[in-house]
Amino acid sequence: MSYNPNANYDINPAHQAKIEQQLRKYSFRHGRAFRNAVLAYNAMSTHNQYAGVGINGGSHGVRVDISVDPRRPVIHVEVDAINSGLFFRCEVEGNIVIQEVAL
Image 1: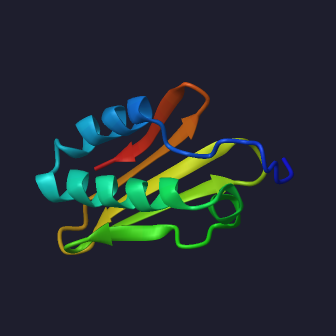
Image 2: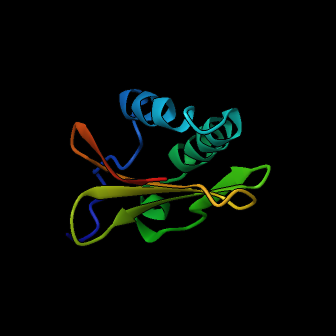
């Protein structure tokens, strides 16, 4: 998939709510860090989202990586709790969220 300036790579509210629901199982910090990262990610231009500019967000010992897979229209989300070692990873594709790993 090549860059499409008309594509929408934002994480929509339905995806955000579904992912946050999973993250709240771990701690409030995970959900808050993810929410902050989504706000920053969605505020970026489509070009910067696609190019991976500033994809590392999060706060308070939680790292959140959000990026677009340039080979297909999929958004990767990874949430790492640096202090506890908890890890969450999922993909957003179309109207579904695919959870890959949750420990």
